[in-house]
Image (cartoon, rainbow, N blue to C red; front, side, top):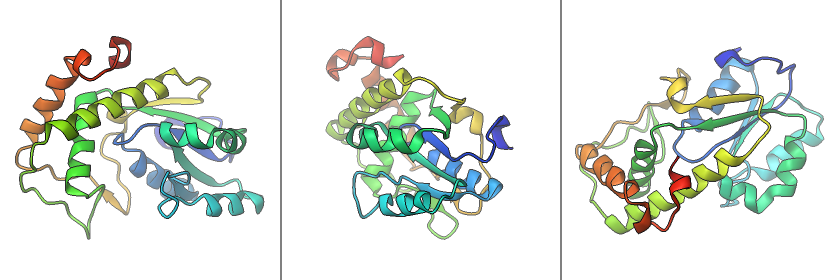
Length: 206
């Protein structure tokens, strides 16, 4: 098993996490290594991007070999259904220790409109415009949702993005950074150093 997963016993796997933690690549790796059906963000808040019908039909077909992930904003919207599906699953909590890098990653993805890099879809390394207003939004959302994930309980396995390392799988690659990445990262660090300007509490920064 990958990442020392124990006692899976052919159970479905659900990953509770936030954005920009490596969860997409982790789902892909689990699917590839264990032969599980990957539903990724089945509960994506944009219906055309999610696959709620697909995972529901798969479960109704009595299949157990599947993996999916859940973000805080998806959980608050579909809590009852997610709780029902997650019952009996092998539950993983995935968090990122380097929050500033997580925020920078979200900012870059939104600004460039490129969320993932693959062999056939490399990301540009051209500088990205610095927008303090959008960075503030990325900081606030990330900190609040990280806090939500941190306060959840009852997991079979705790993982951090840093523990995953470079995941080898057939689809996703580590994203190439824009030339002004250090400037973007420094802005994220500066903003989370002043939580009072973001409207979040100090406890949400832990």
